[in-house]
Amino acid sequence: MGRTAVVTGVSRRQGIGFAIARRLLAEPDNRVFAHSFSPYDATEPWGADPGGIAAVLHELGGERDRLVHREEDLADFEAPGRLLEAATASLGPVDTLVLNHARSQTGTLDALAPGTLDATWATNVRASLLLVQAFAERYRPHPDGGRVILFTSGQHRGPAPGEIPYAATKGALHQITATLADALAERAITVNCLNPGPTDTGWATPDQEARVRRHMPRGRWNTPDEAASVVALLLSPEAATITGQVLDAEGGFRRVVL
Image 1 (cartoon, one colour):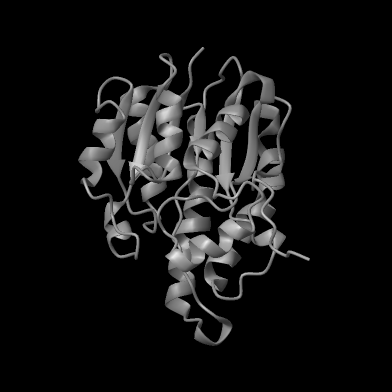
Image 2 (cartoon, rainbow, N blue to C red):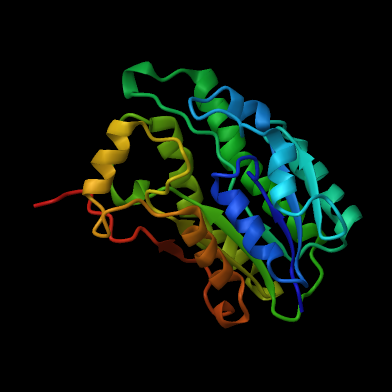
């Protein structure tokens, strides 16, 4: 039986969210409700998709009975409920929630500002928890069980003193994974968190790209499609006993080379 999934952060063709949506839609019985918020990407160094969200949806096959799209600013505390309500209304009961969205935020300790901390927390943590809540409220049993996948970025494997707001929020998602898994276990919903490692989504500067590549045993960064493959594994019936775990799929990334 196919899955009906909400995938957040599907706003750029280079991104992990796009790769996950494409992987899901490759199976004819799956349906995807894709979330994006392109105005945020436009404020970042990597920019919004050059073709806009129209190009993103076109490459996914276009909006139809298997793909629906909605833009929402997840910093709005009412957005998670609206998102799940719209997904249920358009595609029926949702059995899969993939929370790929994130607000990237640099900041050293001496540069921290309350507004920046609040904005990063609201998008990365508060919205994720409210999305899980809204998902659970509307969940109807699926033969292979429900699935929730969170994302972290490896902060648990090494310090990130230049991006404290981001590291703090991703650390929160890491730590809440086991608790959410326990809260939903009796409903046969698994909750896991994926750390995809250094992934080439177009955000790195040439210096960053070269530095990280030297620390990757394969001599290259991971790809969005590789992250999507791990997500597909976690969504499969074979992964029904995996829950409460933070999975490192870093490709052997060596933060410290001796």
